[in-house]
Image (cartoon, rainbow, N blue to C red; front, side, top):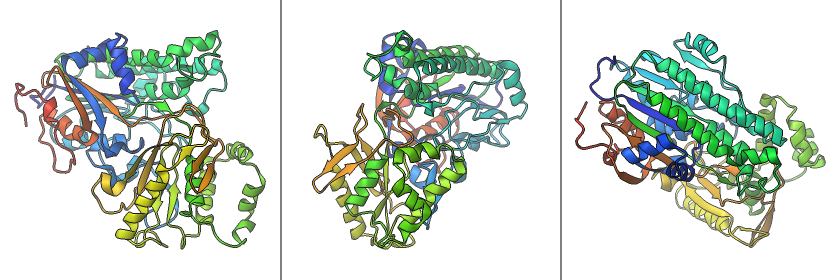
Length: 523
């Protein structure tokens, strides 16, 4: 039995990159009966807010209740504050802890398995597993698995014999490989569900958090096999099996959710959530680099001295496609060092006004702000604000050279999104490009043409920045669509559902519309 609590247990299921439209449609069509039941018995809605400006760091914001402009994590390669140097960074570097870390001393028991962008919390009763079956980030060292208690690692080997790893960045050299990984995805989901059921049986937990990442992996690997995908019409009989592959993975996760809910002797409050979906989009890093260079925001060193550096000479002589292939042979640490050297050496910082930060599909622009950057050339205040507006105006004029249509979806100014001063760590502008099923190699601006070639990492899907949630249970209101809820509102709401008083450190507000007024008040 659970000790020291009068609130129903809280069960949180995370679906990493579970697309809101797919979930809604497939729940309505009967493919996701357990999620559908949660939606019908309780409430549901979408998740939004400025903390979804980047995939990396969003789970950290959601689980901690700390906004992104305070925890500062947005990508796995970031500027060291006060320098132009890049560093590897992870959520653990922020020192920000998930909301359940504040349950210490409350006697509440937790079961946390693969809560993304969190670490094992010491001195909490219960069980915790980190990095059991996650999706490895591109260009990032393999994340080690941790457990508390450490004996859980023996249980994993004994119960499921290990969770198969899948390289989402393989991009599928053949249909046969994709089909094999499709079956591995289904195996992963079943094994993880079976392991979680084993870990939960025989005990009751006040808080259970389990995240499945396979919807994310499946969407990237199987995106082009959808009926509207690029491979569908030309697919072999084997490829045709993958036309429903993404839906099959969602169904498998839904099945495990249903089985896990049967573990509870007392009806829990249940929340299913996803922070992102998926859309057609291919890399844009070459376009944003060309944009900053050709429009004079990012200035190269003058003279020829920099070009005589051996690495710079090699870049000029060797075609980029060949350089991409060669770089795969380098250790990850060397790749990062070369990227950092190129970033530093190919800029005249005294004349540069703005420059692109490392990213994949979203474009991140940093202003070379005086007082914040070592050689800042832009004055804070009016000059900074005018530059942001000028950058946005130039971005809005970009059109696809082939179709003539605008290519920019949104331009977000960090100072406006967070009502804050120029950020110490975050980019000053975040640019989202319009969905496109093809690689856009040429973009036109009234003053110039921007060109890019396919980079080393080039897949056809990226994230749509709208999340999904559904909730039901004794403390949850029923029969309501709640619209869009800010991501930061979930931590205080979870804390309240656990019978705890939300903390002042949480930036969001409790979602009053989610809480059933007839439910007894706790805390």
